[in-house]
Image 1 (tube, helix red, strand yellow):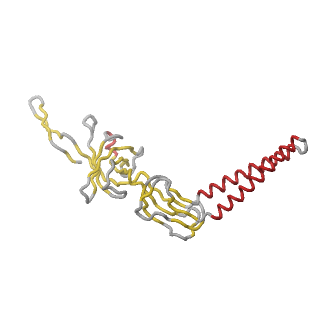
Image 2: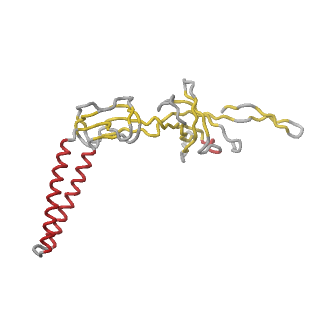
Image 3: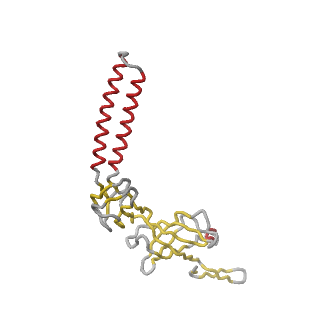
Length: 245
């Protein structure tokens, strides 16, 4: 904690010296609000890696492409089966009108048609999973596979980050909770760099660490091109004059 300029307050026949403001410092780590490690939902061979480490991409771009010929063929096969089931269902309905077959035959035809519809939906989902697309705008942090490499289901493929929206994670003494609250402004001073960024407390953990008697908070950082996720610094807070300390 650092104190700023000093004020002299006139009393009754005496003067009291008190600080004009107090500044409280705590260690902080810059993190991205959106960061992810995308995995494969299917087993297959990598056919496309359009972006490399450090490249920027937009939401919806294909980040990793897998060989999808097998799933596409399965989808065509199920589509043909659905078409046949639809013809069978139509024929069963017409025969029922002529009282040539019973309700059981029609019910079985309807069930077969519904099953084919479900299988087609599954096959189309698998076909879509052949392409791993970006969930938001961002940059590539790390590639974990190479082209022509065979990957397994749930294998990590690529690490991505959205570095346009950053926040600071700050560990503060629990005693500061008497005056620190969401919305309070803060300054972030980066270690080793002459960079200062403005921030605002966005959330405070509802639990206190029983051993260290500290609390974790998040502070949303104003846009600043000099900051990158992972960099460390010091967060400085100045309580409002109306708040107790």
